Amino acid sequence: MSVEQLSPVAAPATTGAPAPRSRNGGRDGRWWIPWLFLAPAIILFALFKFIPMGNALVMSFQDVQPFLGNKWVGTGNYATMLASEGFHQAAWHTIVLAVGQTVGSMALGFALALLMEGQSRKLGFIRSAAFLPVVVPMAVVAELWRIMYHPTADGMINSIIGLVGLGPSGFINDPDASMASVIMTGIWRGAPYDMMIFMAGLAGVNRDLYEAATVDGASRWRRIVHVTLPGLRSVFTILFVLAAIRGLRVFTEVFLLTNGGPNGSTEVVMTLIYKLGLEQNRLGVGAAGAVLLFVATLVLTVFVYLLRRKENR
Image (tube, rainbow, N blue to C red; front, side, top):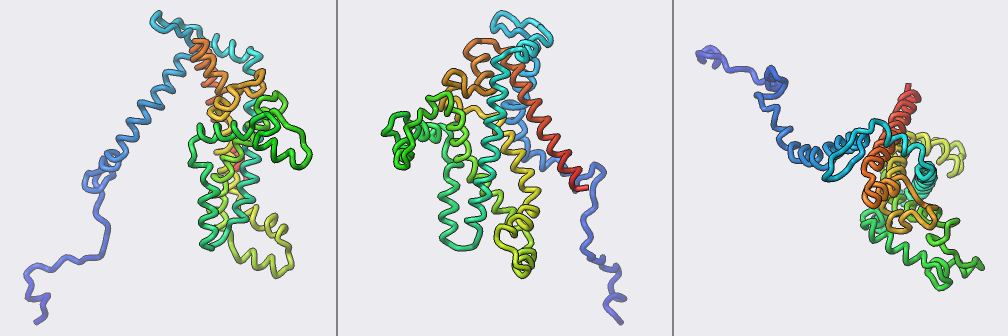
């Protein structure tokens, strides 16, 4: 007689099937556990980001008078901001700065990624050294470049360019060179971040395509153009959005290096908002400028997303 016949109750079959889900979609009714872990971050984001954003939106429609009561002015703050010549100049400077830093950091980051791609131990140290500008606080970076941009002939950068016969430049003290100087600082700090993203993207490019191109006699430049760049198309899209948003919201380096000067040559939207809200006490107009900047950033992100989605069809 078999064991199954002696057993009064047949043993249940263990097929490895997943545990049944409860009616509310979780396992054993514990759907709230992930939200419990996310709760601290959600609370902090709500207190220090989402609620202030909502308050800024409300303030943009008011004439804010601390301790005296706010007065509803509708779209008057937006009209004031959009009609301001200072806002037009600041918006143009922001676009120039965003384009310069985005293109420069992506180009330099891509070149560094191509140079440092590989598995050598020495490259690991070089990558860490190249990535240091990203982890250094922006205040330290700005002070470092302020010293390097010393406008006299014995300044660090002026001493270097003097070796090739170029005259001393005022850099951040010269209205004609101040914007380029700020852009250079942003490129120096943003390129290593782009380099790491590009290196991650390069690891996913099909190596068989490189081998096929080499067999066909393609030069290194042609392999980069016809194999590497198409393989990194999605990476370029992501980095473009991130770098453009970073460029549109630039504040710290401009504030610490030039504070919008000299003569307003580096005034950007963020520094203008700061001055309107905290120096001139025009909080409503400053809030309207912040909302306009947020809308511009949102429109840019959605446009790039839709363009990328159309290309993938």
